[in-house]
Length: 92
Length: 296
Image: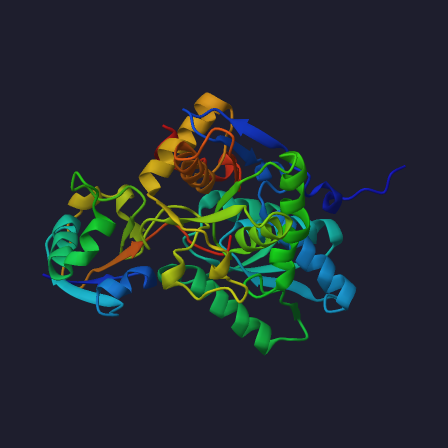
């Protein structure tokens, strides 16, 4: 099913400036794999050397943290929006 | 009776030695011991006092600025102490501790788009300030020279005296870059041989709260690359390991950006002769990160 992934400004240099990318996926894991297949330079920023999602990458499904759901195994349905949010980077 | 306020408790923080595996000595400036718990007390205090002195902060105006948390907490603490309202544009992904502390001090939070991070907060603050000039005093920490000057006139001189003029290298990460720019500029004036090296997150997507990957953000007006003697990149994972080690082996319960700074400083020190002296900053307290799973 088609879902939308929203990207933080920090990662848009790896998606040709796009703030949103559509992918076909049934779970969060599939969606992120598809995203990093389409934009290979993104991969090392999202996944660590053992191919696990980096611990500080927060993934929200329709505004809810996937940690309070089924993690990267959380199922997706048509039209879902997935948001990738880093820990805050700011002027402190 | 002394007429001391919380504003007087800022600065003059201890400089502490870190145990390392060899190479140059490493010292840390314990900025987390400032009254609000972070290095940002220095810049926030300087910007507020400048606002009062210049008359821009008067007539019941509220302090308004963009922050990822620590500057906001400093403004909120001083504001509460001085009876000045504080309004902060804060990315909605700022951690729970920061939001709760801000509420405790009575500050108003304007949440901004988490996808746009610090830039989203900055643009929102600019917009609010431009639309309501009669309502807000907008210090604009990214473009206020009082920010870096607080370190030029404070942090740098303290380090110079505390190392008995023996400092050879200064290492620090950058958010607004005020700490790095102000401290580096003064140290180089005091001794042009001192090398000042910025620490930067290894990826634009990182978990070093408060630090900015400078290539992908709106730069501060006073950002000055001419002060850079190289650059040290660190990953969030390695920084968290160092943060935990600092608590367990050195008794320093500090935040992740402090761990990143110490990691960069020790890596640099390992390549230097023993008589060199490397100084870095412990930006904020570990209490500000208690909700992070890293401690479990």
